[in-house]
Image 1 (tube, one colour):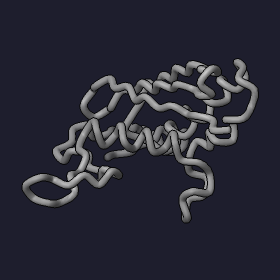
Image 2: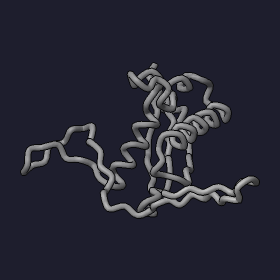
Image 3: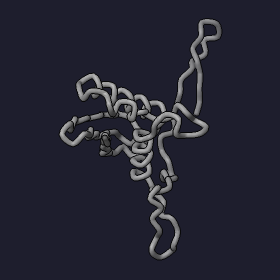
Image 4: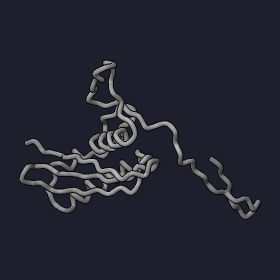
Length: 148
């Protein structure tokens, strides 16, 4: 990566160039700890599945759940018992967008659709995004449920 800057004193131009190709696939552990039938080892998630898993984990993580990064997460649990109105849905959307923009550099073009299912005491959330390195549009479905 190279960097140059244009300043009034030295007339140097600063620009950023970013490497966009990648040879290693993204990899992550499947938290369900599914064993491979032949190798009897944990099956890792790769590429799109790894990014989808990371997005889902970030959305469902609440503050103070990660020991050394207490402010990581979207803290949606704080809004579950608020009145089910457009203000709560807007706050849910803002929290999700903020955590993904700050902590998931592999994605962009984030779209969030939230449907209020008050009859079932839940929110249905669909997060759409583009995985930057492989230029693929992906949707992740999550639901938040209030248990009384």
